Length: 408
Image (tube, rainbow, N blue to C red):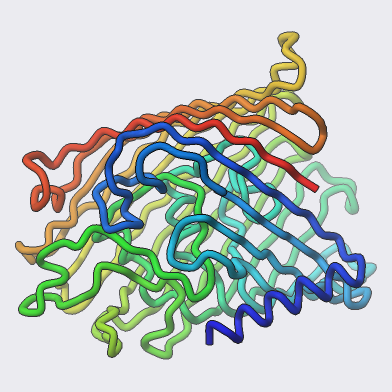
């Protein structure tokens, strides 16, 4: 399976470049300064992406759109990382059908592997953020555990075509392969970083005694986010409403419809996970963007072996500092809040966690192709299962980053 997916990715990439498709390249090297503690990726307590200080290849992205006909487009995103279990593979690969139509209400169909358009911050190509090096808690989790492997159908109307200030879009999707969604929220909690899980990827987390003990849950200290376990379809539906180009709201309801009583031969459990998401984006002036997102839901594994509610929200702002005379500079700030509430009585597997994070980022455009970004983040809170590894449930994590980004 791994060979097949990589072959498909490389074939798509080669075909796109050979056909002079609309292709974007991004390379980002990042120097980080943080506590010298192990990351969750190396089975540690830290909620950040890396262990300690150093220079890394944080992003290498090739995003391509190949027009096959007037109606059909093949899109793919190939990612490479210097960390994680899967270092090179695709994060998205799908066909899009958008027929030419004289009607003001236009259909669109996507088939393949892609993100639902939930995020207000990950709006750059390759599902990156144009404002931050690290994603919010919400979108860090979406990048880890959520990907549509299926079909999405939508209808949309552009307000300008009907001489209205309002535009809208409604959509629905059926998919497979997100059966383990909820694992990380329950056994690791929310994290803040910018690494997207790739297909065939594996995400590690702290080996909690009650989880890995053969006499208890007997699960591994890792999850494969896009594994199909119960052979059932999940679904989501949503709506977008926009006023001119200055304001937009998006609502999504997601339900992976997993059978919470199924476990596969690797002891990977299916988790029945549902959530609502509301996203707001507002541009009062061309140089100022305000955006926010609220997500709340629940996840269940077994007969209430794990039964958790979860919620997170952030508010953010990005300002082009040209408006105050600082040429080629953009500043962004974000405040995150997140929580997981443990509703079950499984005493050896406490899942409750909560925290807050504050992020400040400043980007300087050296040229149209090169930029330098500095970012500081403070993430603090408490997590009940940390008591198995340290005297206190509390954690405080500081992260400072400097990144050089090249786009081609």
